[in-house]
Length: 183
Image (cartoon, rainbow, N blue to C red; front, side, top):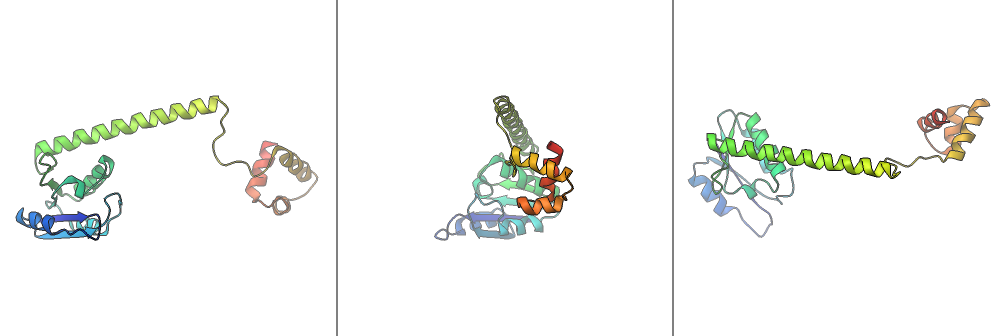
């Protein structure tokens, strides 16, 4: 079975042209919605994907009706594929997983997206390493300063409980435990 998905971004627009094109292409059911393409959780798209079964085709008039980014597109196409279905864009003939050429193109796109993610990750790691070399501290700031940690260690050694210290310093017992480990 062929399902269509039509989307417009604003309430002032309508999906009629998309619906007509999808019906003319053989879609028996067309899911429509008015939602921004930047929004990744779209109700009608979720319903369309949930309806897909082995051998079905999800069709759109243009790729930008389905996704705004390569990452979003690949995630959606992965969901479609996991359901045993295919995907087809009427205006973007290369985006057609019902053909070997279309699957090849989308596989290449997936490889490029993965390569880009790897580059971003390595640049991020290099930036973090450089920041650490320059003395930058990451994570949440400590709830207790060095002086407070020393006093906590002394008072705990004198017999006060972690619960008493946590109440007095207005923090959790885990914070007191970390202060004691550091001291």
